[in-house]
Amino acid sequence: MNARTPDGRSGPASRRPSDAWVHLPPTELLAAVQLQPTPDIPLASIRELLRPVYDERGHLIDWLLFASGFEHHDAVADYLRWRATWRRHWPIGPIDNVAGLRDTIADIEHDLDRHLDALLDTVATAGGQPVTVPADGATGLLLELETVRLALSVDDRTGVGIVDDMPAISRGTGLARTWLPPAAGQAETMLTGTPASAVVLRPGAGASGLAVLYGGPPYESFDAVAAVDLRGETAVVLNERGSSLRLDLHDARPLAWLVPRSLRWHVRTVPLLAVWSVLFDGLGEALRTSAASGEPVVITGEIGVA
Figure 1 (cartoon, rainbow, N blue to C red):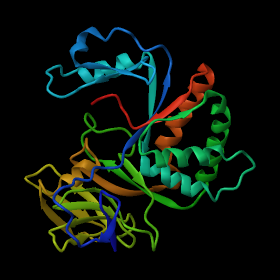
Figure 2 (cartoon, rainbow, N blue to C red):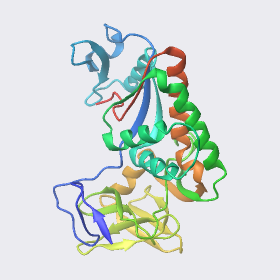
Figure 3 (cartoon, helix red, strand yellow):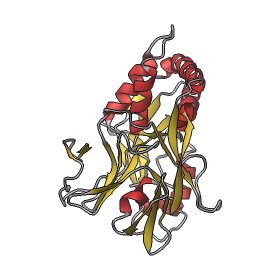
Figure 4 (cartoon, one colour):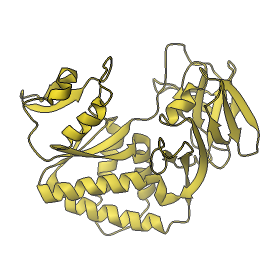
């Protein structure tokens, strides 16, 4: 099996990565539509935390929140509420899911334009950099989006999702993360990693393909991960066969990064369409807003908080 290092090279999964890198989860993307001009004056309550963003012509286009070293506990919530008054945004999921949808719908036949295929390819290869979708193309893209959603809704294949098991007061809504199980012969994909351990997707690692590499070099692989509990002094990982793995919390950081808001979660099989439910909902809302307002959609990995 091969593992992909942060510089894109492949090598044996048992090879210890260089101490110089940390591999974070795939970039989360947003679809945004500008509803009003960006305010010239920053929000007074968090003025000292805001920095203006200008385009290449020197026009003010956004405000970024620098969220380190401040005591204003409501700063992020205040910023997002304020920003939403002129710029709406919707999550559409991690960039690797965009690439997965691109590949999956390539085989779906329909008599519409294939602009959605091209858009997904552009977004997947942009690496989180902004991609602009003109408003005059929004209606056509919406029709394509609904067509492929319908096709996937009757597809009997399945995907994989992570369910957050934290108390209702703190857990997120819906599935915390989704993916397609890797097919036989597909290259191993690293989701998160440090020199001490990594979380990867690999063919043959159970129904989900999720595995933890640890204890290297050479690394051992704990395959078919089914559940994770990070609440104690050591992390406990269970697999589909009922076996368990215990890791020092420092070594378990990649598991924590995979679902940042959760200390306990489990893996389950989901309908194929559910892998991209966030993308269909978020991109659909953005395109409808664009069609109604005449403003373009910008798909980006920049969330506004630095």
